[in-house]
Amino acid sequence: MCNMEVMCIVSFGRYTRPKFNLVLLIILQLSLHTVEGVWPLPQSFTSSTERYPLNPKAFYFGYGRQSAAQQDCSVLDAAFKRYFSLIFPDYTSGYGVLRFSGDKPFTVEIRVDHADCDSYPNENSSERYNLSVSAGQASLNAETVWGALRGLETFSQLVYQDDFGTYFVNKTEIDDFPRFQFRGILLDTSRHYLPVQAILKTLDAMAYSKFNVFHWHIVDDPSFPYQSRTFPDLSSTGAFHPMTHIYTQSDVRRVISHARLWGIRVLPEFDSPGHTQSWGKGQSDLLTPCYRGSTPSGTFGPVNPVLPSTYQFMARLFKEVSSVFPDSYIHLGGDEVDFSCWKSNPDVRAFMQKMGFGGDFTKLEAFYMEKIVNITSALKKTSIVWQDVFDYHERIPKDTVLHIWKGTPASYKEELSRMTKAGMRVLLAAPWYINHIAYGQDWRNYYTVQPLNFSGTEEQKKLVIGGEVCMWGEYVDATNLTPRLWPRASAAAERLWSDEKQTSSVDEAFPRLQDFRCKLVRRGIRAEPLHVGHCKHEYQGV
Image 1 (tube, rainbow, N blue to C red):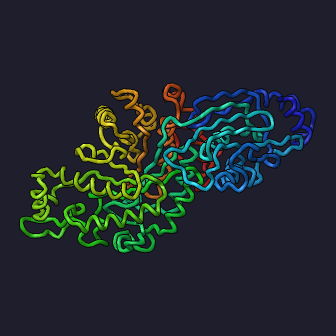
Image 2: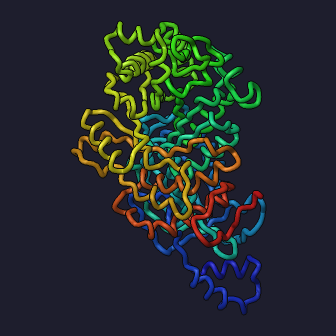
Image 3: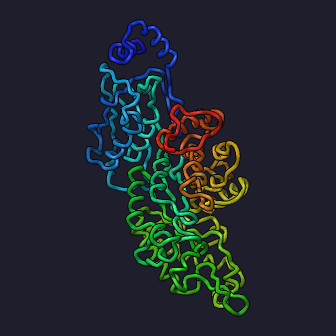
């Protein structure tokens, strides 16, 4: 193989004088290469030193004859264009590619079982694929187009360049599927507004790490940037600025459409009854008036749970949200409700007595959340709620997903046991709050999380549907989002995708993650360094 490569380069490349043959042969033999690896690590991966040169001028994507999806499949046609540029980053600039006419064509042939080209990924979408790379071709088989996307990402990471700029891929066999079905990233666009372009760039980077859910924490206390068709005053008075710091319906469609082409679901969160200060600016009588003694203080607390108008408003808002966001899940929040304002309000206290709640305000929150969950259930949506809702013993449908966000490892493991024992499905976010930063290699902490290491039966463990990396926005906007997120989030990505036994060593993971971080940088993602070192292709965007 090396001899043939030398012959080709000597005959047709820049090195034309025969006396370089021996030197070049030695260099090529010394640089026999297998890639550092794929991130996240596939379930089954075998690779050899046998390698095949790739010429971008003789490289093709194609659909297999047996494939249910064929040309004009929007998801895959778009992916072929994207991945050609990712596989051959130098080709468009014309720099560094040795072109020699001895190259044989190379085809990546895709075969999928279901032609779901115009649909959206959902909670049951298979992402399984197998990839076989041999001389002249790679065969990529998947049940769905979403699995094919994951396989294309893997193939793109297998391609590398030698010191002369020639592209190669090694003989490889991969059989791969995700360990968990839900692998999410939360962005908070209320505490700081994130321009649409920053969100789209994050979706790109998410796909490189095989994340598949964008949890859009779109509104909160500080601002309400979502421009509602039904209630336009919510953003015109609740956003930081009613024109520049909003997400129009067109912006939202753009995010959802971009995410779909990467195989990413968009999960909207409209958190209530707490975290709603910005809502009150555009919707009178929605928030609870707080009292000082017997007179209103002029401040407002959580959503007012005692007025029928509250639920009429919520029903109309969630009807709109459920039509704008195609995913079957909606996140309803339900966390960190401060009861002091409710306690101060005479109307709320009278309602508590009437309902027989006594002085237990957790029962009032339960009453509110049950009503909101019923609204979304009637819209045929599955609700996700923060763990507080379960902790307050609220009666919610069994298909509601509980989201663990707080506690030490000991306490969230206990919570996992309790929730799954109650037969509820669970998402784990507590160990992956990566807006918390620390000096040094804190990615190691995210990598060593064991999501199923809690006391419970095998049936209980099946109820943990995945996990989520959260990037809360108190100190994060578009200037620092990307380097704070990557590659630290990628540590969690491997934990949620790969086999835990094969990926238990942080020391073995380090060189692969370092290599992957350099890939991100070359793809224009400002991923921060893991430690001392360098990338062959340093970030050029500054």
